[in-house]
Image 1 (tube, rainbow, N blue to C red):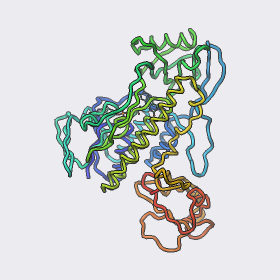
Image 2 (cartoon, protein in one colour):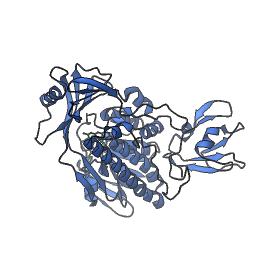
Image 3 (tube, rainbow, N blue to C red):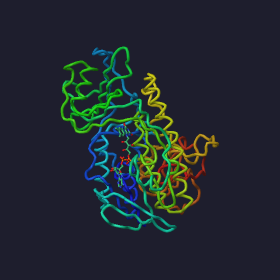
Image 4 (cartoon, protein in one colour):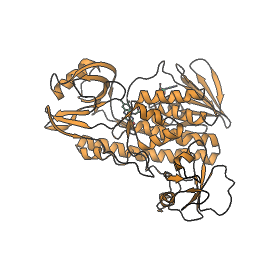
Length: 456
Ligand SMILES: Cc1cc2nc3c(=O)[nH]c(=O)nc-3n(C[C@H](O)[C@H](O)[C@H](O)COP(=O)(O)OP(=O)(O)OC[C@H]3O[C@@H](n4cnc5c(N)ncnc54)[C@H](O)[C@@H]3O)c2cc1C
């Protein structure tokens, strides 16, 4: 089987790794002539960390990133308080990574590209998809290099302006809010302590201020400032002017601006995520406001949901991609738009609570099913002890592209190639009373865990 992925952002890269590790022939093309170098989506949510662990990139992500910084709040130049967007939580047996992790998007992408290279796949830069046709058996794609190729599936992970989505004639329904504009950038800010984040605002309008969050691996901050109606050029002089205005002259001297952009909140959802053998994923299918830090994370989850389904290839499995991921995107857009509105309205507590943004509660269950755990829910982790007394985790046994059959106090042999027999208290299998609790399992229960870590 061969898959062509258009777009080598976080979504395309995640999908390419997931396919390549299954031995599927994949080509990953990007129209850009060089890799994007900006921090953009710099908050990795807990569920993304779990996916990254399965894909074998988590150690590097943890080594290069940092935890959410304490934000020092200054009003009219006077320090008033220090807070975090979300208070750190302790890991629990079922949630090994409860907290968001900060890493600039360009660094995350580099880590993913390096992992992909381990499978012998490289991003083909300066290569755009410029046309395609499909029939029942294949997709024929035309590339800007002059090449025409035939593949089994095409995935458009080509961002908010997706060529693939437009070519399929899929409507991208939503709004661009012209009343809000933000100046964003990556810049060093001499005079500020890089251990902290900063919020500078006026006392009479504390929610309209500039934010500076430290970027791991260097001395830059991700800078964000509200802009008025006037067009500005996103230069270092413009940023310096805003800092002087909000923080006070001489508080921070800016240098080393490596990326900046003027940005408008754009909230849109594609009407379909698939036409025949062509799929769309990530920003190509849904774009988010930055509040809640969901855009990149939702794209990674799309890719992780789609990878094993493409590998499976059965229509009834492929069909679930759109139903599961479009419903989820609709929900996530509701959250982030809601948070954006609360931000605009001045409800800062909504942003601090970090509610629902961790993506650990993403579920594809039938909403009429009221059981505490049901097919479609995220499969929780649990500590295990093996027959030799060694401690491992359930996630260690899920790791890899396969599905897993979990059996609770089984009495018969299993023919499933990835079976995990669980006992409550000792025996020849894995012992884990916690797993019985987390899965609300009775003796004799059997549960299939999908390759993407949801209950089958
Ligand atoms: C200013 C800004 C701030 C953000 N902040 C956050 C945040 O805090 N948290 C968060 O989670 N998300 C954030 N995001 C969103 C996040 O950056 C995106 O959700 C994420 O990049 C989506 O990944 P993707 O792989 O789907 O698409 P992209 O990263 O957009 O990648 C698409 C790729 O497709 C390529 N391409 C386009 N057309 C073609 C073609 N015809 N052929 C081949 N290749 C093509 C492009 O060159 C690009 O490399 C932010 C975005 C922006 C712009």
